[in-house]
Image (cartoon, rainbow, N blue to C red; front, side, top):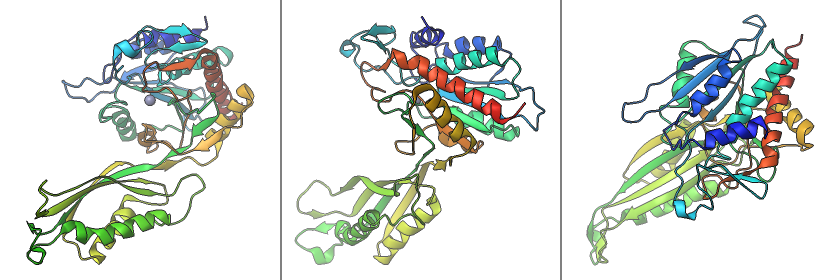
Length: 393
Ligand SMILES: [Zn+2]
């Protein structure tokens, strides 16, 4: 059995439902300590919500100014299993069927973690004294609120002036085959809660009331039209879909059929590209509401800022590694939801996400093709080789 598969199974056997790490970081940390990594736990979580974070670093042989730090980043927590009786085998008993490995976390993302560590082992076996500084950032709070995990580690590193030059996040990004897609950015997310005020009254006496739904309707049409025209962004961007504004909930009314409601509450969300900022989007929405003379309140919540890693050293190294290992020309994408990469991008200019096929993540019977486990490890190892070569000899 390959060492990557063995380690992946060891991790899957730990029932690390978020935010419980269940000893996964200790297993990985011990392997890294043997390779000369310095381990540090960086924690800030409240006593009733125990989050475990590990920051492990192995300084490179180059001078501090000349070395580059490459970090692998990921999470040891998994989402809950769902009904156990619906699983074909126990989610925390790694099981092989038809060339696939089944278990919670098989794709998201314990196999990536195993592949990170074995790739580092293989890299150091071939290059015992690399100029690269190697690092691993792990959290057990990615699938939960993500308030005490990667963001805390990144803030701590920023406060100490520590630098990450390249970061590979092991989130499952492939569509059909390992290596066919990587994420070189993610959209930002921002939610708004709009309350349009009216005057409640009897349906039969509309002149004595003010209907907030009717008042909002023309503004709604205008906001939807901006969406349809791709008009939120300053310019189009080759890497992002146009910014999108979507209503998630809309509510007004007392339940009675003869009452004009006194207020309408509209929840909406932006998924936005690097061509927009929270400020630009907020100003635009408010301008539309003001133009229609609405009486309203509006509360905003920024869930994450967008980031983009344009093709350069890291994207090039990853593309080359995937090509060498699989023959695939990988596709760059910024689609999908947010990930912890949004926090890392604040302290690292080059971040990409590269991991297994994501078709079964969070589902019953989560699985990964066994053949792709070794491929993933080799892609990570080849990426390290290429980044080391960039530093010269
Ligand atoms: Zn994940």
